[in-house]
Structures are given as structure tokens and as C-alpha cells.
Amino acid sequence: MKEKHSFNFLVGVIIGVLVAMLVWYWQKSTRAEDGALALLDRLKDAEQKVREVSVELVRGETAVSLTPPPADDLQQVKGIGPVFADRLQSENITTFTGLIGLTADQLAEILGIRLGRAETILIEAKQVA
Image (tube, rainbow, N blue to C red; front, side, top):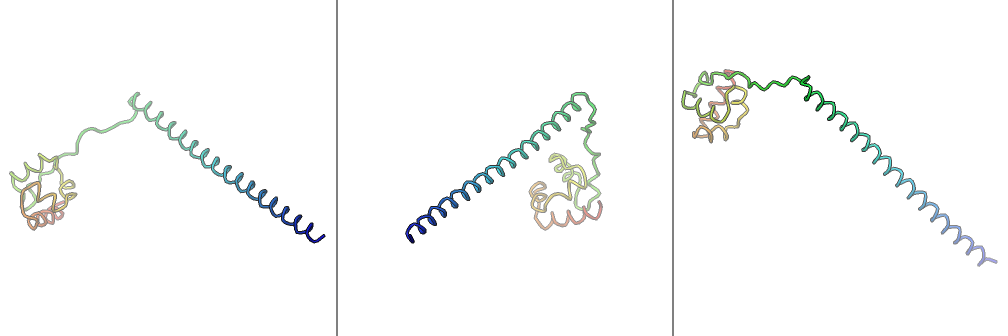
């Protein structure tokens, strides 16, 4: 009799494990589907936004400024003369903001000067701006 009880117990444990695995798998798959559906919703919203913006662009309702900002007189910066100003303009650096946005290494390479001098010019540019 005892053998029958242990057999029934093992069968019950195996069935319980199988049921637990099925429930776990079902929950995992539905969570993945929910995540995929959420991503599809976000994709649909993004595509709708792209369509709206492209329609606005076709109609010309969106104003886009294509004019560059007015150029600053970079020669106001101590250490920048007409030659250095021309070199900076050839690299499309025409404003104090563009000049300040450079690193000392980049400025030294553009102007062909020492790193220390480039650092000094950047300090002066920050004061002028």
C-alpha cells in the first residue's frame, strides 16, 4: 500500500510541475506578445507623425530658416588678424560661438599654430563673446 501512495505522490508532483511549466510558458509568451503590441503601437504613432510632418513640408507650412547666422568680426579677438580670420572662414567658422566651440587642438590645426597660442586665443574669444 505504501508503494501505491509514493507512486501517486510522484505522479502528482510530475503533473504539478508540468502544469506549472505550461502556466509559466503561457505567461511568458503573452508578456512577449504584449511587448510586441506596444512596440507596434509606438511604431504606428511614429509613422503617423512622419506622415504629418511630410505633408506639412509638402504644403510649405513648416518654416525652415536656411539662412546662416550673421558672421561676427573675428578680428575683434586678440590674436586673430585678417589671415587667421580668412582661415577660420574657409573652415565655415564665422561666429564667436563657432570659434568657442572648437577645442584648442582643432584651432591649432586650422590656424597652423602652437597649442598654447590656440588656448590663449580661445580664452580671448570667450571674453569677447
